Image (cartoon, rainbow, N blue to C red):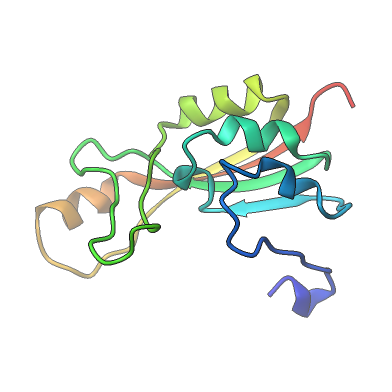
Length: 136
């Protein structure tokens, strides 16, 4: 979608960012987007510190008090090491050199009947942040 409106987009190629955090410096870019990435990392701080761009747009899943962290039963790479509370992600960004300029939370739509789907109608599941590097 971003390319369709004129942006040049670079993506990682499946590298383990915990092991190779410097990969985020591969391209000189105006902004970095990280949609549903940081929850998969053991140490997202290291990647956030390595980003050289001055703008970051990121989304993460929020921790749900009524559900365990996501873990795929079939894909060993598809699991969440972190599911953040908003203040935890804010603190992570602040400690790694970012200042939050805007943020938004939203709920996960569900058409399934059950106790958890009802709770999800009233509990924010996702968190989006626009941040800029401090002292640039």
